[in-house]
Image (cartoon, rainbow, N blue to C red; front, side):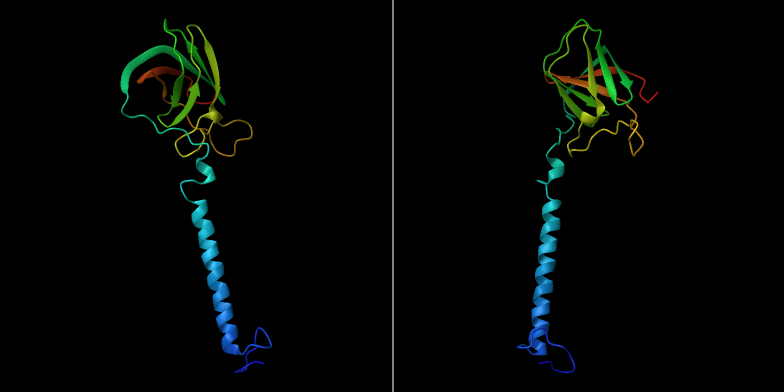
Length: 161
């Protein structure tokens, strides 16, 4: 039965009861939608599962090494021409993106995929390539973090050829 010219939601309810039911349903839907949005944007969201470490700004700068970093579109080749080898280390690109390596021996050339470099938010380095939807980032700074020190590397060919 309807009142005041309206149509009741259920025949056993009057118009006021129908309005209360609709308001309750709308409020419940709004609360659930907001809870879903908040859970997607929280610190534990899926975007952070592949996050790398934050750039270590407080490490000692140990100077530059004769190690060349050559850009090959979506990869870099790191050629160790120094008289020193390195154990487990982290390669840093542009003071933001990092990639852990097992080590770098004297005379060794290591090939790393730029798309595997991640920042502290889980974002990847925009390496470019044939199927890239955005312009690639330039490679302007490359560093090696090893044994609590940061070493500068020589970047050759920072843009895609």
